Length: 145
Image (cartoon, rainbow, N blue to C red; front, side, top):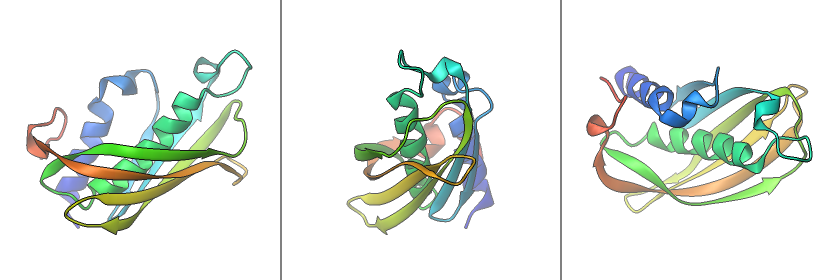
């Protein structure tokens, strides 16, 4: 486990331009695991007055991605695929997405993630495949060691 690597990933997470839209997001890392916490507000709703699917995807993909990234110290990972299961609509709430690596190999990383509401109920879950890019982590904006 590398505290510097985790700090670099957390800095990279917060420096991504999209994070300006998701104010107050928090991410916590452990080896092979990530937890993403976000307070859901009406700004994230679609016309039917519930959280938009893009936010489900962001929480699930990022928690799985960063779980995978804790194990990859050299290259920036890319999401190859991610499959989502929507379980329940979300109104204003605080959500926690938990990601965990299932398999890690030279070819790809498979990680799963799940979102829970404040009552501990499953909101959505899924699984993704992540692959190494040609980009070095140390060259990525925000990844400061």
